[in-house]
Amino acid sequence: MPKKRKAPVTFDEWVGAIVENHMNTRGYRQEDLAEKSGMSLSLLGRSIRGTRPFTVTEFETVAGVLDVPAARILEDALAGFGGMRKLLAEQTAMSPTPNNVSPMRGLDLEAMTPEAREELGRAAVYDAEHEEDEPHTP
Image 1 (cartoon, one colour):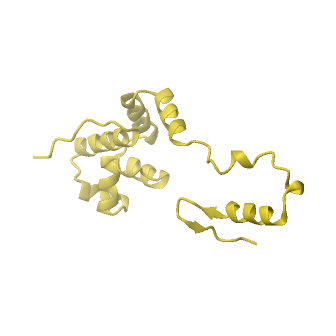
Image 2 (image 1 turned 60 degrees about the vertical axis):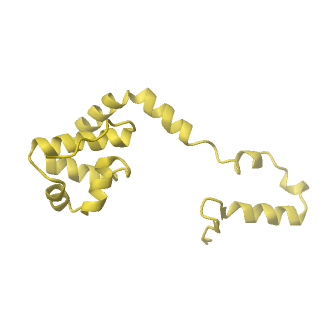
Image 3 (image 1 turned 180 degrees about the vertical axis):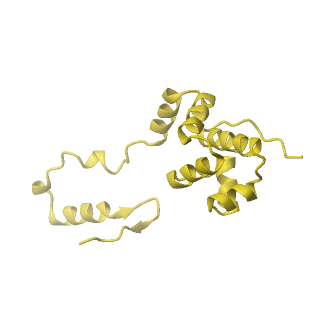
């Protein structure tokens, strides 16, 4: 008997729940869907639980294996989640403008000292999230 899952909260959880519903309707286990879609069982399981979003390619492949239009899965997930307005509001709230970008607008580079320009150049290639310099491209 399958474990009872908690009700979906995030949009990714809703997508996973809808995929799981279609999977169960067709009598597929996660192992079956993983094999037919070419996804690893681990990645599929995390995507179904909503802890990892499906990539577009994975999502289209899984929908094809389930013989359900991808748009229908997304529409059902969006309806369960609470609509596009809620999704956009949450996505916007999660993606603030990086605080290292907007303060740089309007700087007078000509008035800066060479040292200040050099520091600004170092800041432009530093990835604070990963605490390392981004690779330089020619």
